Image (cartoon, rainbow, N blue to C red; front, top):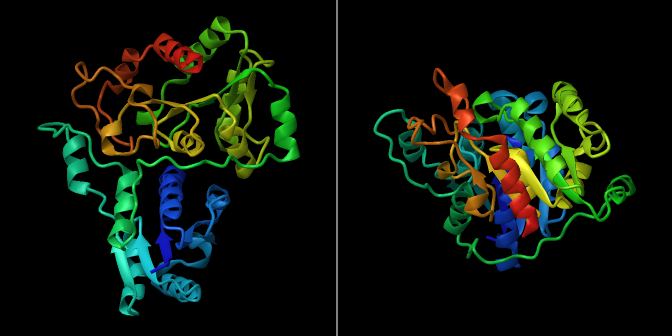
Length: 346
């Protein structure tokens, strides 16, 4: 069982969380070969992992419906995997793995802990306790396939080689402190208000003259919002949206001194390179298992749960409650800025 095919087609953060698990698995099982099947865009995440072949697929255009998934199965079968690891467990992968199972392949599936998570986010009678991390849930699938895997062992991390364009850009900040801020999230329940982010940036620039801010986001709408934040100080605040492709953005992120992020994909991208990550949580909570890999608990900024006992309201941040906006008032910009200064001083 040296050749494992992994299936995961979801959001970037969920896919990024696979990388440290594979890094550990490959280090501790040198004979292992991995076929990583996911969306094409995520290929750069796996570029520097040895013995990993990334197979990017376009599900929306090329493999729609059951007949499309059957064609995908036949295509993937040509890669000659020995076992199948379903890291997603949604209808699409359930159908796909069934084709493999019916063809005699050994298949193992992630246990997402859906009941435990539902108990964590229900408004009444919560069972408020830390759940198994998603990293460990991924690792369990591989362990169930017979691999030895300990995520607590330290692994060497190779930072990506810089393109000339990224190297030239970073040279302008040589000797400076470089802080990334990713202020967006998929749902409003996870997104710290932008006016407060502006206050965080202003305080950081005032407190330390060598601090420079890189703003991360995606798409034209976010680019325009970040352009407004960039006006705070065009010499020290740079909106990088549209300047680089995804692979180059990973190179940038790997050289940050710190990333400030919501509970979102950028937190997991920075954690891949052991960059300190300060995460801001609203409707969600680290107990659900989506905290970035190998980051200190003290790097998590949480609202006042005594004032808002209904939190967390959702695993993904899409459910809130009337008056939720007041939650953010319990996370002052000064608190975030002071924590940033404390982290970069260590």
